[in-house]
Image (cartoon, rainbow, N blue to C red; front, side, top):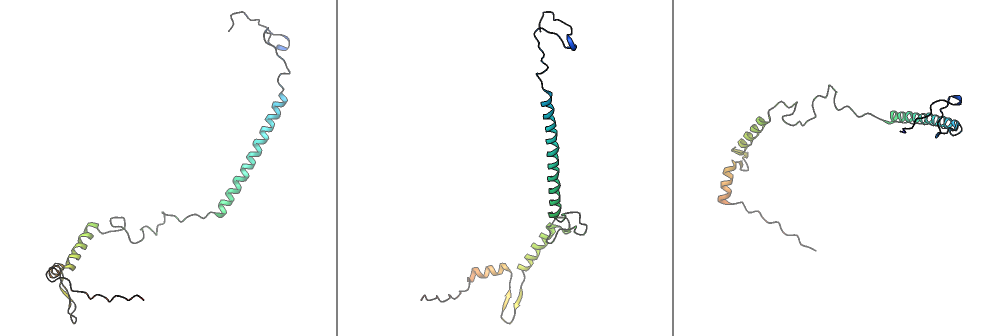
Length: 152
């Protein structure tokens, strides 16, 4: 800022009067600015119209070609997953630990059974522990070797 006193007052037509400032009424052409603003407005309106046409076309295309996937949930009839279901999951009412204990018990009972498979042929089922003792004492029966094929 200057410390010198400034001339205050107004000249002709209410314009300020300063020694170092000049005002030219022809410096700024408002017609060029107005033309630019009009062209800008027209361009914006045309681009909006083009965008709206593209949007509506794509929406119509999508509506005609899109098929929705079946709902994964919300179907009241299909509340349970398909079989086989995992133990411990909803819909499986038995206890997995009890199932395991029952299976081990059934396997042990099957391994320790003594019964006839074919009485006429002399084929019997014996406990696994007894079969292991017999094999360790007598060994496995010999299996006849198949004859080798002759190459021509």
